[in-house]
Amino acid sequence: MRHEYKYYVPVFHLATLRSMLLPFVQPDRYAALQPEHHYTVRSIYFDTPDLEMYHTKREHIAHRMKVRLRGYNLGGDTAPVFFEIKRKYEGPILKNRATMPFESVKSIFQGASVDTYLPETNKADNVRRFFYQLYTRRLRPVVTCIYEREAFTSKVIDLDNNLRISLDKNLRSVPFPAVSELFAERDLRYPLKEQFILEIKFNNYCPAWLKPILSMLELQKAPASKYVLCIDSQPSIQANRFRGVSLRS
Image (cartoon, rainbow, N blue to C red; front, side):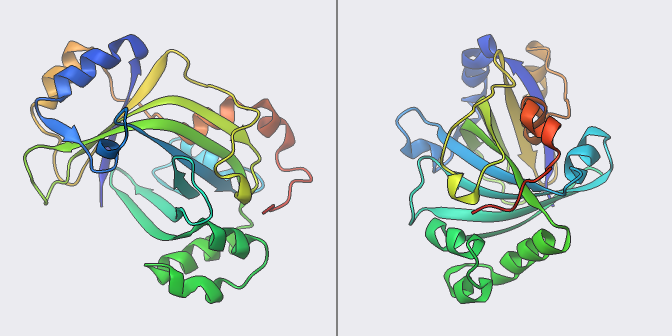
């Protein structure tokens, strides 16, 4: 299980925060490969016809869930796509994750049997969990959340804590996407034009060196849900409430 702390940060603090973090952290292996040391995250979120997962987050329900497909950068048919179920129990977070090529994911959503493609995944049980949630709860693709992520890991190796810090910038959303549109951008809305989100993830403890940095920038922990922010920024989602919206591929 993991813990997550989230903070809204004014964009004008980005360079300052980065410089304060760098003595303690380094770009993760994926960010380090990119020219600007960040990569693009693209997640299609699924929800019930009455937006149950959206409302449980808005109402701060202690036990809640998110179901999403996630890809990175510009994608392509051979790009890995991740099936994810993220559960929150009070504070700790549990995630079930499995990967499969995008082409295979699209085939499943176009009607192919899930079992046909299970040999292509690293965790077949997690794929089954994903589709169990999808079909038993009538989940539909609601919104794609897109942002650029600067991700960092601790310079001091502590496998028991596995500290990870990310700066998530330029948040934007696509309403009612088809699964085939995971890497597409259209009808964009930008819910955080002058802010970005700082995320601190760890297993056991938040490092003591982070506390003065947060204090100096006057950052306060907040329930910063990208899914909620993106839903709230898209009037068409609020208006439709899935009237006539089907599970598209």
